[in-house]
Length: 316
Image (tube, rainbow, N blue to C red; front, side, top):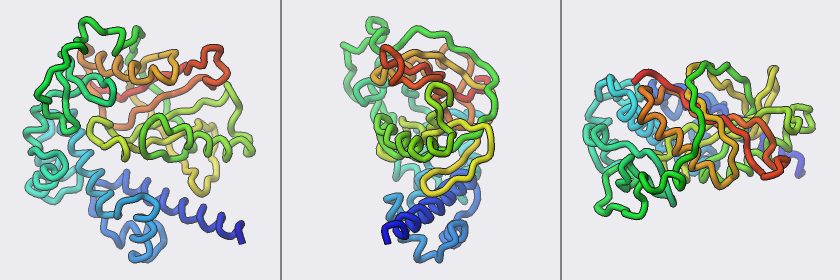
């Protein structure tokens, strides 16, 4: 009986994974409940209940949130695209629909959002601009300046010394386990991935490479809903099941920073990458960012990760 329950759950998870992947790649087209239910091979009624149970949002709410967050990212980074173009490429039928939805999520219009200053670094769960101005989650400036967080006097607190290179990164095939929520809890997804991959001969300590792919911008998406994929890089096609899916990390031009850091220093490393962009002549390109790990940090004498932070780029 327990084996039947486990098999059934794994099948449901595999179908939900398939739907999540489909939604990610089709936000620009009409995604009716009937269509996504068909992808999962469920009836619309059953799919709605199952999706909501596993994801914590209805299919409609989930799709709308991803669309508006994609629009927010484009407003900030695709500066040559008009708001009308962004509305249609993100699956909104009109600019007015985008504007109404945007105001609901961010309490401002798309135009106002585009004109706000971008966050460059974070500290203690808060976002700051390059000059030390604290920004709220919706990117409106807070009324108070945090005097003791002046960047000029506290570079070591926020940033690290490293060489950042712009280079072509290869396509990589991966199997993954999805994590949603705070970054520091992604270890749970890696534990599941390792438990699945090791008996299949896919994971060898300090030989196999792993990667964390981040699908959302944490300055736009609430941290509890940020999606990450704990990935194991593979050299061949692998059959997957249950919570384990497969994906391709695309080749392309990336800004790559090499770091040797502890668990507590990841935010500093990301701050360093963000600061580099403000002085580089590049802007972030479309696509996911990822961390590529070159070692098992638990075997490092100082428990450090040797990691490349890779961010897609295009000319400013």
